[in-house]
Image 1: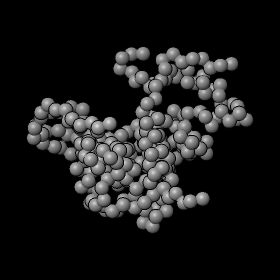
Image 2 (image 1 turned 135 degrees about the vertical axis):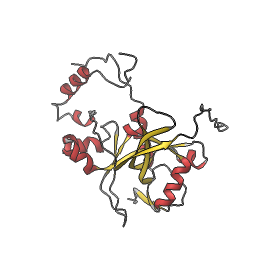
Image 3 (image 1 turned 90 degrees about the vertical axis):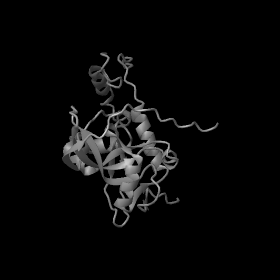
Image 4 (image 1 turned 45 degrees about the horizontal axis):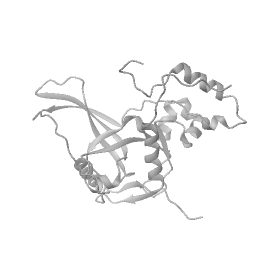
Length: 173
Length: 70
């Protein structure tokens, strides 16, 4: 069977693509009230994966890049008994936990990582030019490869398109 | 459903009922098909407070992206 690697390593100056990992990406969170002429805010940093389509990025068809925070699976294990359990991790692997998507371990030297969980519930829009500059400054980065990249995108689509019915059909007996 | 409520919020009572009726049957593999509505709050890696000076406030304008020819 052919080898289908999950990841590649991209240079900092390479064009951004869907599935690129950017470490410590700052996001500005303004406080609820804005009192001119100043605005108080928090800058929070996340490791993120780019969710926007590569062709939109390449053709500059957007000003804001959609990014999702990513976490080592251990972060979820320490905060949730569900994810600590084998059942929870298995549900995650099978794509049965809406809002979360698990990616494989990375074994590239210098980029070794455990399983990574993508959080679809807390996406951010980051200005494209800012992200290009940040990626250059961060240097080499992990890049998720096809078909895992498309699988990630599909996972987000499945999460986003959910519809909850106010009155569901009762289960069949 | 109130107007401010998300359309993806399911009725908890219905959800609970669905899960409890699906759960026991390990042999049928139904458990593998179940969805788990779990949310974990994950704080950011780093967080700091900033104050910014507002240089301008203006009404946003639409940014039109020409559609690709079919």
